[in-house]
Figure 1 (cartoon, rainbow, N blue to C red):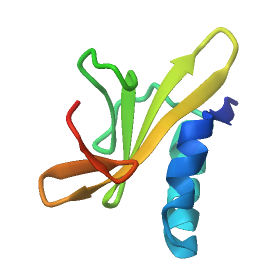
Figure 2 (cartoon, rainbow, N blue to C red):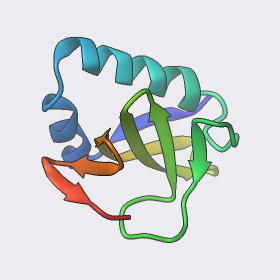
Figure 3 (cartoon, one colour):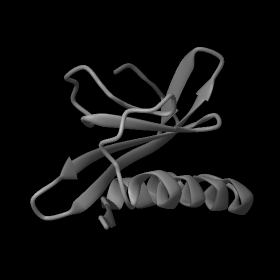
Figure 4 (tube, rainbow, N blue to C red):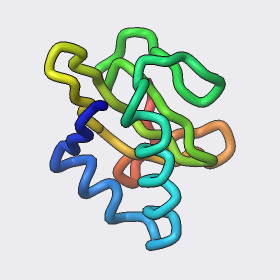
Length: 97
């Protein structure tokens, strides 16, 4: 089982969403990242090299960006954003990966 860790920025990102949205995001994180965070699925994939994170989890319109440390058995949530149309927003700003 992997421990889930949040960066301070990811915690701030989470606070920008409503309570039901936060609950949905946290349920998605727990369901998909706690046991097999490296498993490629339709909603969980590795990203091309970028400045944010190694991987992305899709939870409805939300995107959770994270890194995995297999040796220490933890997942570090780097950022949480949302999609609006084809645009990604992180911390209130449009973001390009």
